[in-house]
Length: 129
Image (cartoon, rainbow, N blue to C red; front, side):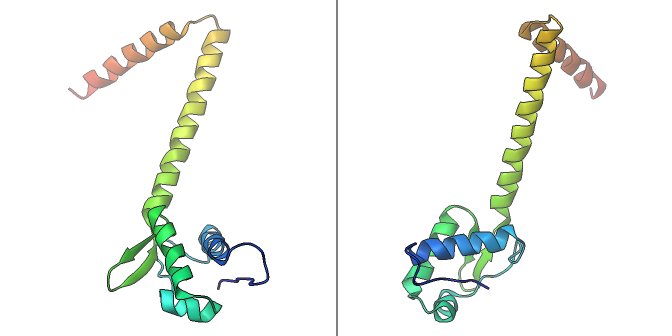
């Protein structure tokens, strides 16, 4: 599943890190799927097990994989959920920028817009009381 080129000047751990991230991004490895053991990966790629362990530790530190003691290393959903949350926040921020720009073009100040939003929020809260 993974390809490492020992003739490449890029360090082996960087190649393996990118290969795993690419496999996840392209769907070859799915959320919740188990990665090979450190030893098995090292044997398959003909590299040092410490290199594989270093890669797994780095991917775990960044939240891409999680290691379950005695079970194995798995692609972690938290990383992708956090990524989706960041994307959602980015879209909301872009939307807010568009609304502010359009309100300004119509002659409304930011304070006018905030007052209107707060008024609307009070009305929404009253619905649920």
